[in-house]
Length: 448
Ligand code: ATP
Image (cartoon, rainbow, N blue to C red; front, top):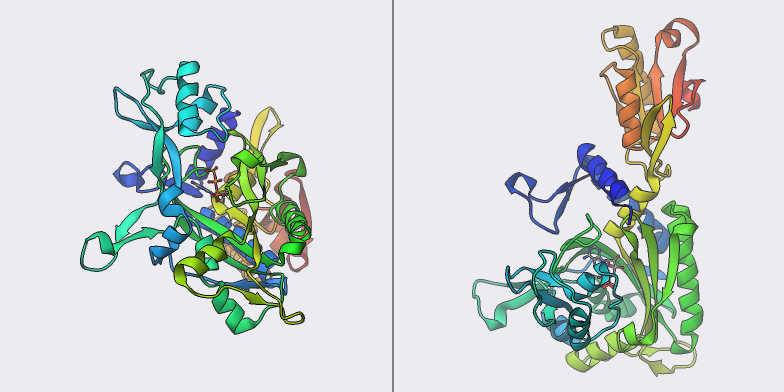
């Protein structure tokens, strides 16, 4: 783990207004994060790129935006009420709670796919203690859904949950999409939105949060063709991660999840892992979920979920392949790919090398000095001109060019345009500084 690099990224993200601890002013709230102006711009760009790539540019995808609070039957049918849990251990002295598999992993013991009894045995075998050095309890399940009550009466019948995944809002609308749009198989339904999990120990910056954003697709297929559709979604995922999100293929790894670690209904799951500064961890996953979800809905709701093939008139419940992305984990991969330190003139220059399509600010325009009206006027004129061509152009009137460059580097602005005396007195050309190599060229503003 490169904790130094992680700390640098977290500190830059805070200092420059990307991401702050949630409710910071009141001492914070674990597992929650607030996005500042640059963070929200980056997050929106990630989500917009995803929506364009997976929904708008394809003819086989339908978008939905379902309610966050759903009928609790959804979570009973899906198995979440009974089994959406993580293994919990307690520090026997302080009462603090931890995830048993994480404590084992931190002690170098592989805990993938173990039952609670096996985890307890491993903790004993390796003498694993709590981070405070105390003995640990037996391992038990802890359900991660946030519970609430809907309506004015608080009783067992008013219990509802904040959704722990966006996927069920897709499954519950499968029939609506089929009835309104008559899509041919295979087709997908996509949704982006908040998900909530009461993680036992949120950690690693936004990587494991209690409130986060998912982007999920349920791709409905004929079971005879599942492998082909799975491979096609996997290859699109690589294309998206490398071409749209600018991640390096070398940092992306496929983990073909072994049967004993997969959900019982899944015939194949690939976790896409990424080399984060915190280590190699899950970025997203693609799972072949068979007809598990639609069959459960049919069973519990009594509604028919069968698809009728338009040619053969064959009736069957489609199978599903689910690519599931987490925005925060993508954002962390993008930040850690972009974070660059170079030695220049005996000093360290730090910059975020965002791909152009993701940079929260595309260009900063600045006058060389702030107290020269002609420079200021020209800067405003160039700024207005560039705004017609590019989104997110910013004007910096501080007149401190060294500082403007340093800030632009740290927030990942690809180009800084400076208006100087030559611009107004000579040739109308401006200085254009390039973030990645700090080189400067002179150019007509309307040719940028
Ligand atoms: P993990 O094993 O790391 O807890 P998971 O396998 O439970 O993750 P899924 O249920 O497959 O995750 O959720 C799909 C995606 O949602 C994950 O690949 C990840 O990108 C994102 N995600 C899940 N939990 C969190 C969280 N607590 N914070 C941020 N993103 C999350």
